[in-house]
Length: 183
Image (cartoon, rainbow, N blue to C red; front, side):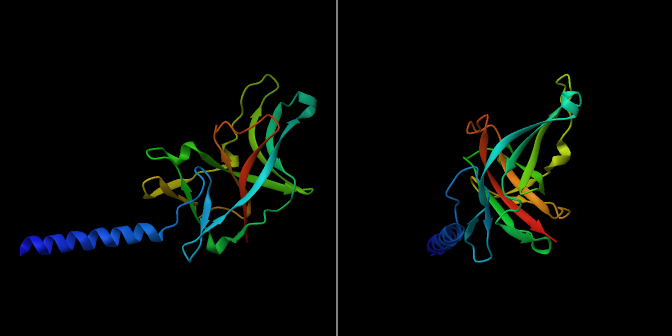
């Protein structure tokens, strides 16, 4: 009698776990962030073709800065500051999502958005550009699926998820996932 009770408890537990896993959507693409909506569906972020933009400061005497630039001033995907999105990312099992994406803060003006990626002095010495990136935290939802936790202090601006060393970047451009936060 007790074996049947244990068996029925295990079956119920298995079915409830399986039904929970089926209700959580799985992103189509690996290493690409998606927004998780209230109805448990996924929304793609704006996918933009960003071009490499190298700026010389002071004719090169002030060094250089490398940006990824998108030729529109504002992302088509917007969120109010008071209601930050839930973002999710799928990675291969056992991988750290922080190894796949970073979140870069952009500046918008003159019909384009620019995301600083690196800076160097006249002699090629690297400069700190960490202020151009948002520190992210990740929370495991299930194997290979993580929620990206945006800091509560995130400011209204334009943002882009930059892939890290995925081999798809070229010397002229890269696909990035963009969104904006409004006041």
